[in-house]
Amino acid sequence: MAMIGLFDSGLGGLSVARAVRAVLPRHDLIYLADSAYCPYGPLATAQVRERALFCARWLVAHGAAVVVVACNTASSAALDVLRATLEVPVVGMEPGIKPAVAATQTGKVAVLATSGTLQGDRFGRLVEQFAHGVTVRTVACPAMVELVEAGLLHGAEAEAVVRGYVNPLLADGVDTFVLGCTHFPPLAPVIATVAPEATLIDTGPAVASQTARVVAKLELAPGSGRVQAFTTGDPALIRPALWRVWGETIDVGQALQGTIT
Image (cartoon, rainbow, N blue to C red):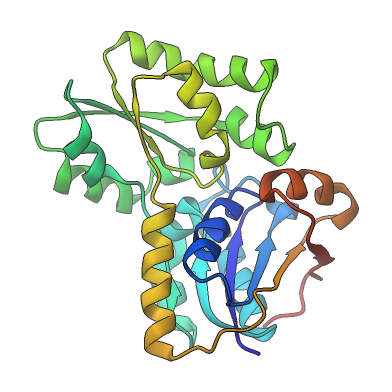
């Protein structure tokens, strides 16, 4: 049975998988967390591209009929290469600058992301194209990625980390926050507690809608709604946090390195 494949550097892309499942509940999903190389943000673009190619090829080899790059950093570094290389459709993502500009009342927007996303050419083009007359603050938030990888989605530690990033932006008049990393939607309730009046922009639902359009064009038949997860790291170490982020127990297997060419 053909599946929808998704990958990310770690567990953040589960937020996109959740959005895909919401619109395509009967289609089977296969998710790959490249945990052995997480996070992608500090890696060189060439290495992110190499990892994205590995992950995408692995998914296709294991039955994916469409690949969703559930990672802003990987989309920025490798989306064009993936589309030129793979024989299946590839859905990517990008930070929601356009909807954030439309939403802001103060004319100040903050993009919470990884350094890899913020330094990429794709992001620069988005700001140039859509941010006319609006101040766009960019903040790399590695500690928020670490929270999600540890499955710490609420509580005092999570709130303290979020406040450290968000409070200075609120003090500067930012009223709209772009969740420019797929790790951050699971922390949206904490962000909303810290910034209750702010607007949060999550592009996961838009990616899910695009995935649904691609699936319809492919005439990809529904399955049983099964969700499988794999990791390039140690499944025993990843499993508890993955279950907390996903919200239910699912299979978590090992994706062996070096098996895809």
